[in-house]
Length: 298
Image (cartoon, rainbow, N blue to C red):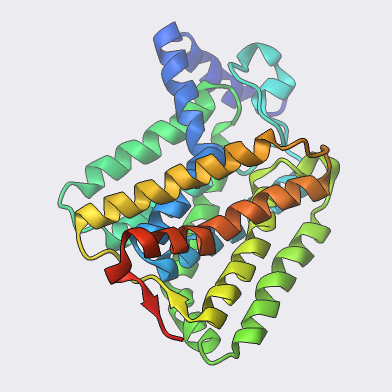
């Protein structure tokens, strides 16, 4: 049977199962869910500034779509698809490469780029090890899925680190309308290319729908001359980040209460609203709470 040796690894690990370990590793599944990005992206966008927010959003968006495309190409089953007894939790989609492992390597690389703390290596090692190990423990990924995710994540880290600066120089020369059209065309083409009923709830698709709103919000802000520089103090960073995260979850909750039909269009409207909040709505709230840090170039 394919993956027979990898099944032995999973079964050996699960011999040490306990309710405490099950609960802990189920919690780590949070780092592969959209709620995690609802915290990360608004926190960086408002706390670090919109330029870093958009950099983080688009590298995660492209990484997520690449992961989805690779899963659809390889059509590799997950462990619990082949043996339901090893599946501690159930998730959708195919297995190779692991999206969680891909994201954890990408984010860890970005943290190493910019985090100046002397003990960052220890924290990042445990972050990578625990999240990656949890996917095998939970029976939702084989070891080869994890290794594949690491390779793809490392590739996107390299693109962000070495290719992005040159690309940004070229994009800064483009007209705002051209950038706006680009921000709309790329996600729309990707959404159409990878469309399927089962893909609508995937992280790639939700971020793709959000990317359309992100582009709209940035164009609105630029047209009005609005901008928000990075926080000047740690206290301001924390306050602005908390405001962005709480506001995002509040918007998500309010939209969920609306009697919208379960359709692709309704889902698109939900994430369009959320992305417009992150780009423009939260900026207006910052203007009220932190008037000294708000820029208006108009």
